[in-house]
Length: 159
Image (cartoon, rainbow, N blue to C red; front, side, top):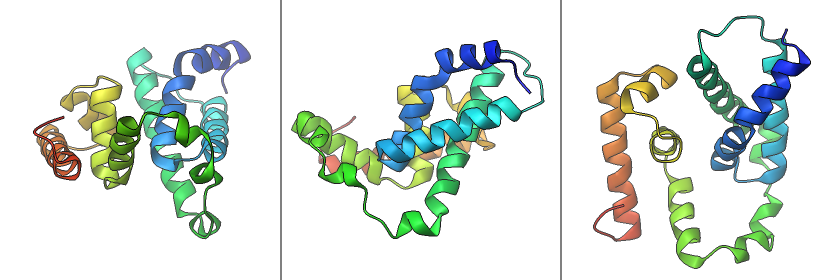
């Protein structure tokens, strides 16, 4: 188990990243908070040691992605409509940003994950491969295909 000081440090370092990953997958603030708490509970109970800060960050990303997938598999979750779809928050975002966000969120998970980690978190293909347990060349292929899907959906020349 981790101490309160270690948990507070981890929250300070990784809270924003974890929330962004959750929002990307769940598209809902309430569900994001549920998974956010679950991820940090898993961290508190985790008894292993991390090699360095990058290893710890990769652990948080992997646990967050897996927790989101588990949450989405829940039968109750599949039979509800998120209230955020009707909220005023959606109207406050610029139309172009909403369109791009909608297209990114509509991508299949395998493309959404690598695009997020590469463009928003700044990971290289090799690092993403390590995090997602995939070969580096597979990551390059997923990035390329994901960009092509975005290009087709947005009707543009590039991202």
